[in-house]
Length: 131
Length: 86
Image 1 (spheres, chains in turn red, orange):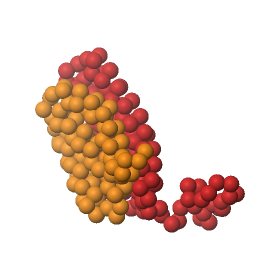
Image 2: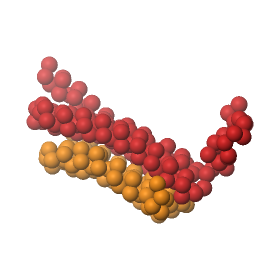
Image 3: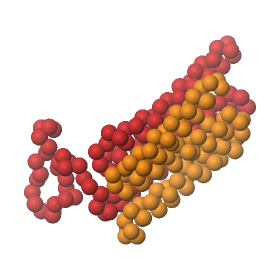
Image 4: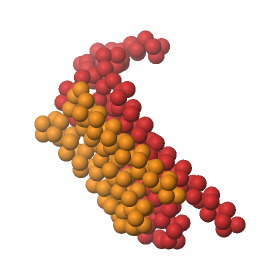
């Protein structure tokens, strides 16, 4: 029974670690396909919001499998996952704002684009592919 | 298990290499900042994986500190992008 649990835990750890690395590599390769800096901010979020927490949780499970459960490490892992999710969302917001303020080029197909027009101008028509 | 650990290290190292290549070929500074953020988090993941391979629990602390303080690096990059304007 213990041996079966150990094998199941090993498979779970392998899936978490390899899946986390896969998300990071996918984000890095998708940076080539994104058309402007704002799409790249969007592409970054699976890496920091899903890939890194998977790696951290997998590392915690592996430490637990070898050394036994330590409450301090559990608290640290939960704090790390929470900080990663908060950091990734705040960092996306700050980076996108700074990119727009530094006049980074916007993909011309972006529509509607509320930031590029004065207020009180009426509703914009959505992009033709979206209708 | 050791193969899985080293395979994850290879994935993260490939992420860093691809990210650095993308930083070198990026069209505008904002894209460079975004990809630099990805390289930073890949480095944190690499520290966690090396802590697993060496059997050292200190890497968990390193990951906690890097994920909490990683926002400072991003905000600094954003301030550089806007030339100090908020």
